[in-house]
Image (tube, rainbow, N blue to C red; front, side, top):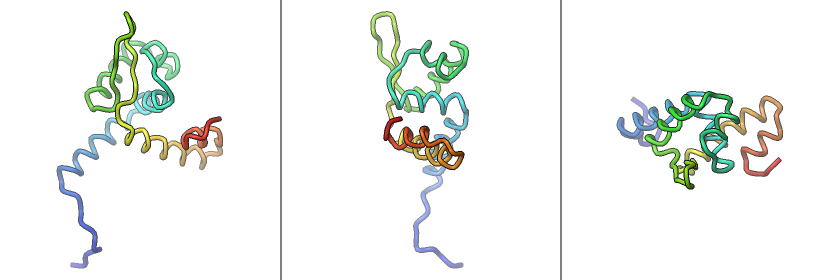
Length: 117
């Protein structure tokens, strides 16, 4: 059997990576991470931007928080969410940027690369 000279990751690492990709396999959760990568927001702001109902956005945020992708903090009565994993943000921005560029959306592609509008 020929080997490539590279070590394969352990099964546990592959399972963890698959779980992380699974968490981002939901378009609303991917959109939430994209939005939070550009700035903090509360649930109602995310619901307006992502286009979902408050309870659904809250559930997505709970899953993303449990996965360690986002965190929250209180500002008075308001709960503000922010990105808690810059590696996930970098992966999301890279992938969305590549796909946006391929689809002919240069503004989205530049934003994904952090170059602004």
